[in-house]
Length: 330
Image (cartoon, rainbow, N blue to C red; front, side):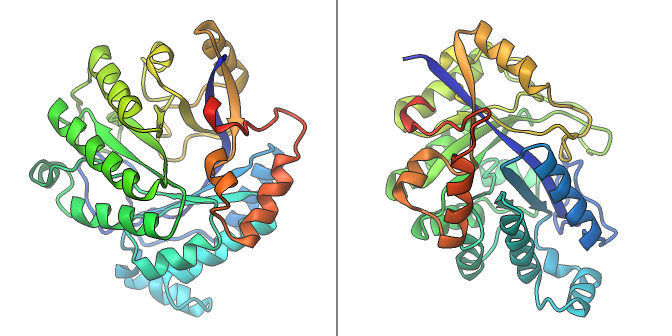
């Protein structure tokens, strides 16, 4: 069987860049308290629809409700909380014929219940399970809270994307332990569709200006650990990792979301064009196929609401650049 590497044709919608955390590696966070306006949402959705996107990645900083300016402005617009606003935006995305994948940080079980109804899948990076190391680079983040949300998502049967952040000075033992805990959670609930091994790349806005790059062999060890111990797909961002093509033969199965716009999270590291990526992947003896933000396994399981299911059904009928629908090939 020919090896398949998948990607999602997506566009990113940032609800707000405000974040209550102050991670040393972050170039995303802004403290001004602004949030996306209706015309920006409409512009993003129109652009995404025009480009044939099937996924809208809904992003924000964490604990947005702590920002009084944002909460007051949202109340003026009729939203009692930031989650109310996020749910409303996801409903607009579904109405536009695309699938939301929401990653807005740690949220409560009750909030996950609401978000599940309007999302094809959701995500949260664990980053690193070592709490002592985390205090050095992201002091406000608590790994146990992130694992709690990972467990909650499993209980609610939410197809989930998570992963680790590498190249910050952590050890390979830290990385393996983080992956082990992710896999252990998946073994209980069978809900993690992909794990991202994301390397830190310094940018103009991050406090950290240098990284601790992993060797090729270290990446291979991490990928093989996941593949040997689970059925979780392994994603490595194409625009951040120079080894991505060479890692295909060692078990890389996904390169994440690709957009014709700029990478809103890593704007200094643009994506390659999809036709270029197809050639690169083909040179490694594999086929690049498009997927939805919900993997085939979870479509087959029916892990989605009726509202989300209607959009999934329409997207699966696409005839151009047909969607990958066989889980075994992913």
